[in-house]
Image (cartoon, rainbow, N blue to C red):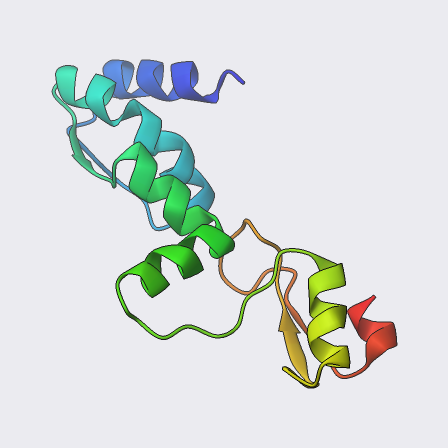
Length: 118
């Protein structure tokens, strides 16, 4: 909880002139500080809070991309919906399973059957 205040304090004490992060959890948290950092004279190479929220949430990213007409893989947020799509032969194994929020390939895996999906 003290991360934003500690980060602002660090920028002030160290006279940080610009902020850029490729670490998604930081981008997501720092996006909310963008206006404050800018007011402190720190150049921010960060998205705004809404863009950061969308990009950090895989389901929201999928919806956003579809809204732009960009094809995306079939995406589910509930296991029951996945199982129904499997029963209806709308999808088939293997399935790529990822946490809804996060970054990179952390905690992702390939499910080849019901046991792995569960």
